[in-house]
Image 1 (spheres, rainbow, N blue to C red):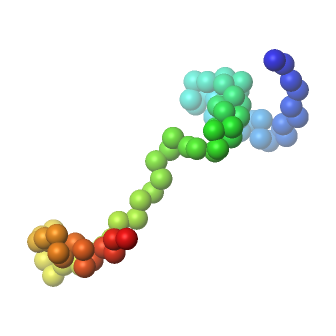
Image 2 (image 1 turned 180 degrees about the vertical axis):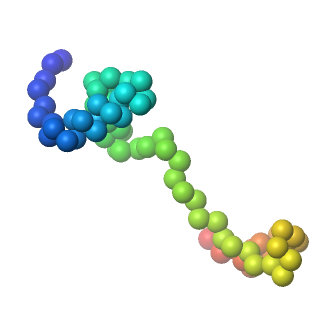
Length: 76
């Protein structure tokens, strides 16, 4: 199916640049974006994970057993 979409010039230039760096066409990028929206906006990019910081008097050496881990990290 063919359709017409008005894309602002600046956004189109960014799209064109991204396509060139990824070796993809503008059409491919647009279709990937539409498919992502239809899937619920799911992204394949990894999300930053926040890990708990465990303080130690001797950095690089932390002796933990399961009981200690349960005290540090709240589990549901």
